[in-house]
Length: 440
Ligand code: CMC
Image (cartoon, rainbow, N blue to C red; front, side, top):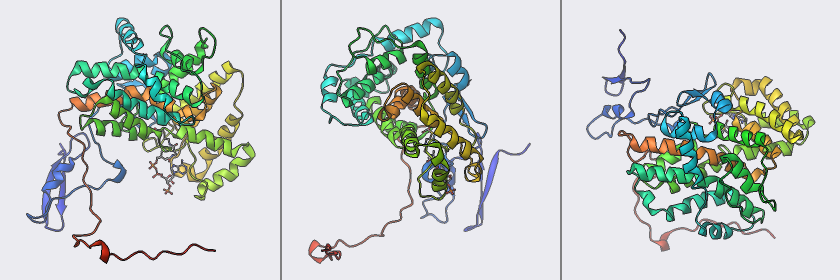
């Protein structure tokens, strides 16, 4: 039987070390014993952007990027998208098992009874500038919830944790919709607890004077499916932030605010917004080849909605979304003209050597924006629509981290590249940098 170990020889000293291999990994801390002498700190690994470092053990989500596989708690995401509801999936992520009928009814009831936010949240959101980005408002408002629930800091108490998880999943759509209403100068709409999770969110965004906003069931279902597809994605940038903030035992509201802030960036959850802006900029199918040429030449930025750190095959979420887009366009009765641009872009990119060689395929964000646009949702709201469902994933990962005995406060090491010790220079002795006088 081959041994599950790795033998490393340090050529500086000639010494050999045998390190255990468990689950295809060696422990970075096992390298610390490799030292030149007693003064030496010991060998570290250098892994900017965590390209090859497992930061935790997790049983929540499995991805095989080479084979295009994504499973939540073992269930393939396409099966969940076809047969489950978002709240069922949120329950699965949080509890590890699909709910029974009774459990789902109870979970839905709990979430529904917490959809309202403290009345002061209205005033808080009202305080933002008229043109504030809804994602900025969402990040700040979720963080502010921490001040309403001071008990949330008792993160070791399972019951308290569960209460905040319920509140966060329940209140995210309300805060998200209100951020939007503020950005368009419309009055806030209170939750309608007779509606389902996705339908309630749409109603809070869209209702004007009608006593009850009628959400087309297929549209509500499409949004619910999008929520399922975005619910978790193992150790991505924002989840890593969630775990990292949570590791200091901060409360989950500020941790979710931090995770949402990470999601906001255009390389992560902000990509769906960037895709739409890119498609609008391209404008017409005839401009696609020139645009692709610019991207390849490194002058046109990146092809947004393409490429992924872990998927080096088709993103399984993109496959479901592409199909969903057709269904939504059928219901709303109009094809988004940008769809033709997107399809052409996809066709060219999938056959172009630059993209093929780098294994750049459409990701979840490539088509989701087109669906949101067909639903009349403005681009600013796209990352917000990502943050709502990802909350369940963040919370499942956060709780897993808290219960993991191997976890401690997250605290990476560095390779220091600055000055060695220097003597303090009094201000009178410091030389001004030469200033170039302005022209004219
Ligand atoms: N367009 C053009 N070239 C690209 C792209 C792209 N979208 N993505 C990667 N490349 C090139 C990159 O220039 C590099 O080329 P070279 O080897 O010649 O230097 C090579 O492919 C590898 O790229 P990388 O930056 O090392 O890859 P990464 O794993 O660090 O980045 C990524 C992953 C998602 C940040 C990146 O592919 C990207 O910026 N994509 C566009 C933004 C986007 O759609 N993000 C949404 C991700 S899915 C939603 C989510 O989960 O957040």
